[in-house]
Length: 286
Image (tube, rainbow, N blue to C red; front, side, top):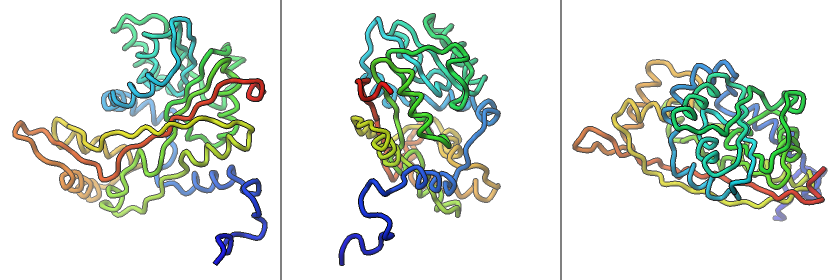
């Protein structure tokens, strides 16, 4: 049977595939709804406390071409997960986020660590950055922050505001979710679009990026069951009491209790992210 047997007659080559429309459908079908600025404001403190994935931070930062002269624009900075360590190596960092509370936490952490070369601005992807006074930087960075409705517009902004290079990290399904957790609570799992959509949309924009796969250890350590459970609860919009109990049982089923009461948890699927980047050239300076 030819491989094209189940394809619509209208699709003859890759150029006939509408990746933007396919991504729109995948976004509409994803299990977890997109969160608003108010949602992130309310979750900012808990997010900052659990967002200490040093292996992710180290790998991303080590792959950035930073010097003491580099300026970097961090879009969707959150509480400074990457902005803070980057600022120690770069000349200046501008951090954008649509959550005011996230930026407050970033500023607090910067003051505590005596880092003074970070500027924060409350802006969303769809806002007019130029009108808000944002100027081009050597590098633009979007770390795990491109789950937006209009991805081509976001990618265009990343490209337009970079003078040297663009970096973004995107999920490799099912990262950052755990399908087994959804099965345990009885919710059908739809992860939404991942990096393969981004790559093809970039290709349609005339950009051929580099891709580096970042894979992390499935094993993590938690102080107690409550901390481990919290690391899974964010994956869901809301859970009732029974579903939360099922999720807690699932977390216990993939964990080993240590003598001191802590837990060693092994995820069934390894967390993986795609680090996508491209250099600004004459062909990408549009």
